[in-house]
Image 1 (cartoon, rainbow, N blue to C red):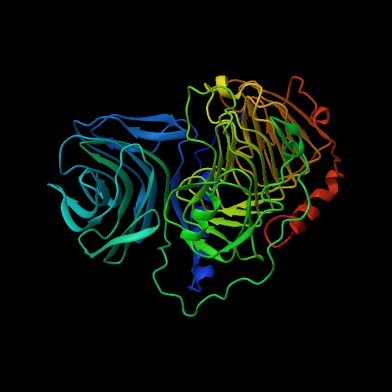
Image 2 (tube, helix red, strand yellow):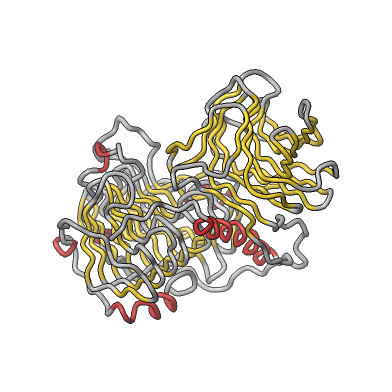
Length: 534
């Protein structure tokens, strides 16, 4: 099969646009706000490895790998700008931005809107002084229109969004509006990125014609009804007796607490000892990742409960020096029946040899990095019956081609009965793990790749239903090759053929399972995946 280049596309970006649009629309729906349709004007996630279409002035710009491919301005001795796109009037320009270094005071890293040239534009920037500044530039020095306090820690990812609608300008950091101004000097222009004597990495650039919601709720949303239950047991690697843990039971048989505020949620999931945490309603947490301790079941009530604004971290702090499972690795965790929206980083991250984790019947969309990432030696994980949608970078298994010291012989994960709903890539993208078992999932319109198996990983892909997926399975997607076996799958509606070679260890040597007829998978997964189904 021909090797197809990862797309910059306006295909991948259509999905990226859908992710941001959906995040806004879902938030609007959850909060009772009016919604509007949106058009995608431009986008670039740099996954094709180049920056074609960008015009640069000053600095040192290049596409690099920073978790994923991204656009980096590495110099701090120049006033660096890059612009792209057409000349739009109303526009919302969004990008993930990671400051690296600031050379002096009065410096910023920024997104640009209505850029009529590389010296005439509106900007929204993070400064070295711990502020966000909204301003205008028309040939001379930047002019500040509004500013507010905001964190700008080098090495930390932030999401910046600058909206220009009519003469109204609004600036958001991590989906929270912090600054606004009125100015009509620049009626139209392109989108852009900038480092004013500052270096930064930029990713997931998106331009749309939809602004963020500002109207207050017209009426309070009633809390979801239902009981807090987590019946059944996992199928797949989370059921295996290994590493001192026999199966995954979470907080079964332990006390139960119900939470409906951010502080209650964060405190409960990090508490030591077995516990079942019942989440009632959508809880908005501050941007960040929140640690989950061992022996926890975190389960939503009804079909309207979940977490917005942040994500769950299941694992110890990242440490390259640790290359075997530590005695205190996080283990025995269940996450079920939760909606995840607007995560500032990953929605769910499993790392540092965490094991026996079951992620089941969740609805995940509109985050800013991975929806479900498993990495750094973690193993004995089952990801099942989840609905992922309106997002580009879906699921990673293994985060880096150079992390073999932690990952080889580990990253044993089962993915079954998930609905990969128009998620362009990482469905999952696999490095090193073996066996990685992908069975009875429904894939639809994954425009980049379905299962990508690389870095000597071994993937068994069986009994899945692929619909309109040009490259459903590949072991030559990017980077070092892996091994994959594809058997008994359905490739429907102009889907391509699998690009597989090599042999893979059979998961049946670890656990018993039954593969359903792949022709029945689409209907079963659409009816049974996501929240409100357990």
